[in-house]
Image (cartoon, rainbow, N blue to C red; front, side, top):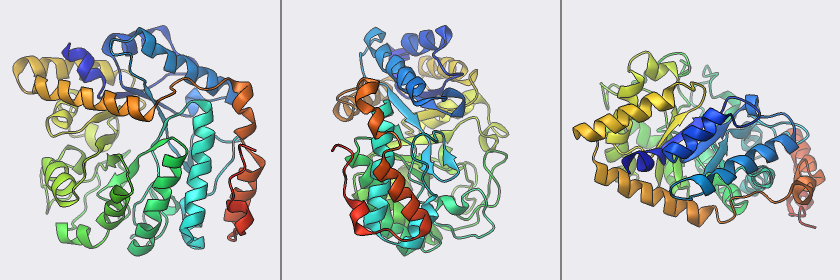
Length: 373
């Protein structure tokens, strides 16, 4: 059924601390591929663990019985949806200041360990933007550095840390969000860079991360008029097919940033955004805060498939690819019992490493994994 294949391309936000009956019904009926958690979905570790367990169990009632992606934004610093009693980590800039990829690897790994313990299997991190404009408050200390070589050097370590923790990382924001002044939550940023400018700067860390088995990349809601005067990168066939897939030789999955951001909604309808994104080869449509948008987008995509504007064969084929990937990466979808994992949350060694990173000096003895001991 085309509805079920389309559903695998959707990530949706949830309203509260527990799954609502209408959310369960929508996820099951449409075979939705994943959910994303925000602060409104989080109170205590026990509650998050229970919510993730409930989400994971939905697969038993879904057509494909496939695991769901349970995702979050947990970068460290100011972008961290879960805080104490889990370990509170410094922003990535602190890792750039230390400039030791081994430290970067261990920090990401330990963030991943705590997420995995709760039942979260995908993290929309790390941010590998090059902070090329000091007036850019949107990215700021979320970036490792303003130095493209330094960011590139750490990109691999950041990705590998999450992979070791059995959490799928998502690198962002392609082709680079480090120079913008406008917040894409509020309006569409416009950058006058050429493709050569991007090749010489912000694309470099992405290429390095792709070689390190980064299987998921997030597109940026930014318009580059000299490259594509009509569409921002998220909706640009030029960026998806020519730059990302051809130039960068990327073969993994592609997600949008939140499709409720005003960078897009001020210029395109919910229906237009969903159809266009699927037409050009986007794998995942991310709906974070607008709970009315996913049903509207789903119906628009269904109608587009009936009218021939979306190729059903491609949608079915890609859904199979998504499911196969999830089955290979999420081998144990259900979280372990809380009593078995609670010692990992805010682990003493994680707290020590976080404090050392914040202080700017990490002794080697803190880079030995001991959570399992």
